[in-house]
Every structure is written in C-alpha cells, then in structure tokens.
Image 1 (cartoon, one colour):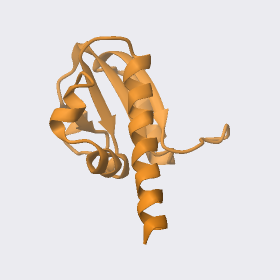
Image 2: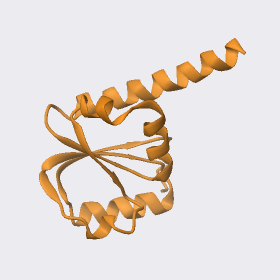
Image 3: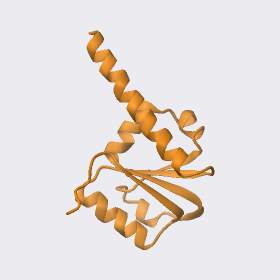
Length: 117
C-alpha cells in the first residue's frame, strides 16, 4: 500500500532530521550517542554504522546496559543523549550527570517529558 510506504518514509525522514539537529547543535567534534533499548532500535533502523559516523558519532552506548555504569569516561567526547522520557531513564541520566563520563552533554527525548517528571 502506497500510504503505508509514504508514512514509513515520513518517519525515517523525521528521525534523520532529528539526528541531524542533534549533531549540528552540538558543534563539530567527536561524539558519543547515549541511548536506551528503544531509541537504539529507532536509530539502527534509520542509520547504518558508517552513516552515523559521517555525523561525527564514533561511539554508541546504552544507558540501560549493565556494563555502562562501569565503563570508562572519555572527557574529550561530547555526549548526545537520546532517550525515551521514562522515570528509569531520567533517573539513570541524573546519575550519569552527577558523575559525568563525557565533556559536554546534549539531551534529547523521543517524546515530551512532563515537568512533574
């Protein structure tokens, strides 16, 4: 069905535009993309490894990975955070920002986050 194909293309274009916005707002330089399980799936459906590297994203990390808390920080990298606005993700992000692994953070959510959260 052409309608389904068109809406699929619109979603892909929207995600690509959001990633371009994230990478451009963070200024030139090497970046890490910090995601959760769902946002990792979204990005991997839209971008291949070499394509995302062209956006200066050289490291992909999962905030919900058990190994992430013990991973070594790279202070020379900028961190693009792309998460679903869940309570667990916000708590994990707060823990990360209390003890930052990276030099700068640019935080983006995949949906609107309520002020109460």
